Image 1 (cartoon, rainbow, N blue to C red):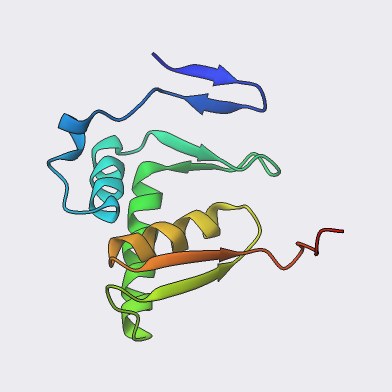
Image 2 (image 1 turned 135 degrees about the horizontal axis):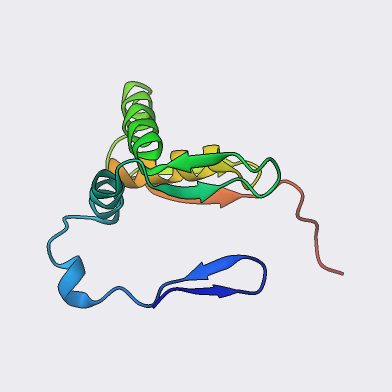
Length: 114
């Protein structure tokens, strides 16, 4: 059952162990889920209202994965990712997972606690 939580967060419940056994990695899981959803809207930009389909996300993640590999990023590398919370962040995050690289999200707006 899918539920809309406060703040427009969609919660669809846990992923079962039997569902994840068929996948080699988190990146593989994400790509296969996008591939299976076709033209279904799966992401909406909260600021602009722009809708993104699973096909758009799949194609974008695959392209970005190729770019990362062309830049020399390999499985086991760590990608530092500093970005606003938007679709490009998700694409780069998932592309890193697709090539089995880890991601270290960075937020330059954080300040030291006092």
